[in-house]
Image 1 (cartoon, helix red, strand yellow):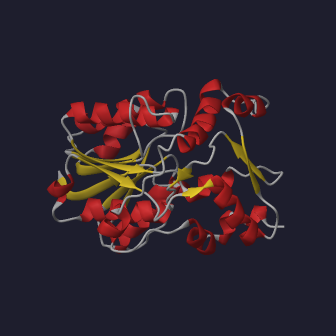
Image 2 (cartoon, rainbow, N blue to C red):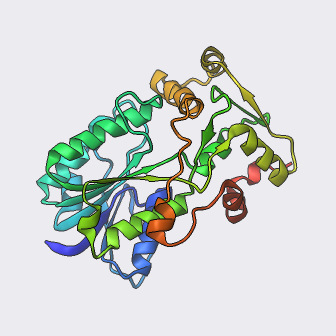
Image 3 (cartoon, rainbow, N blue to C red):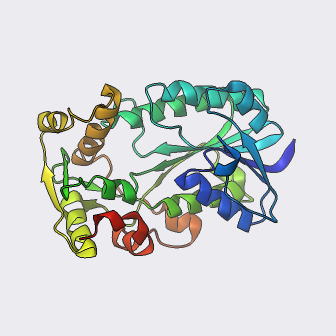
Length: 294
């Protein structure tokens, strides 16, 4: 076993890719798990390996990807009706491969009775990890700033059953910074058994988000609160699976219920710098919202 080897799953994704770049910059020995070779970040001159797997459900490839590693960064899988089963399969593969520690990217407010349906899935995954015997740390991030931006429809309207609720959304960069700090901390055992909320510096309402986006894009973007019934009706023509619609609607409802409003000092405490606000995220990532411009 290589005590220094870190396996990064989801290495082609928004968090995994950023984490891989940061670990490489710190000289870490890492193995990136991706679905195809061309999806792995290019990190020449670094101690970076690549392992291929079609997904967590392919147990043999995941065991091979985890082989010889002591630590795994486990990104939550693609949203699907079978997501929890896939997470369980990945955790079991890690145990079978002899992994000792997992840092799992969970979600804020993970609980069996969470309003947001996917937060319930994360709680089930956390419980499976707890029962596995692995050392663990849970990074419970809030919704991402870019998710709030993508709530805006083609008509310039951000609509959903969030009422006047607020959301402490966070940037992918900040989550990657926290993951880097946890994975590379020489006092790794200090993070064992911990669940860290990872949020932005302040919570904002969707009406405030619309105002910020209006100023940035130069077009009128508005927030229209819906009832739950209106939210389901307005999404009835999306040709989406029931679990997917339920996830969309319940994410807004979780904001309205106040479950995503609490801020946490985790980003500043572990990365040493303040978390990005929504306005700062827009400034740093203009390509993400270019399609919204007037």
